[in-house]
Length: 74
Ligand SMILES: [Zn+2]
Image (cartoon, rainbow, N blue to C red; front, side, top):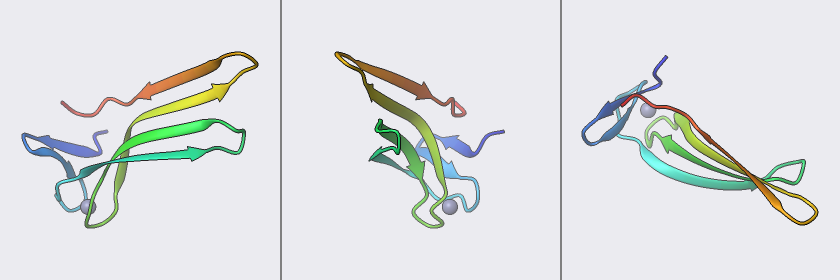
């Protein structure tokens, strides 16, 4: 089910139709991964849809990067 509506100006909030903006967030998870997420956020109600997440895990001599991309309506 689509959580946002795509228009030529960008994505609109499903709840109130406001134009959403892009936010980048990064955090360290409990299991010591670095997690970066890219999301659309509504400035009015705070509704948030993650569109992409990157998780970086540190190994002994390497890093593993997991990228998850969520499909949003085109
Ligand atoms: Zn909203």
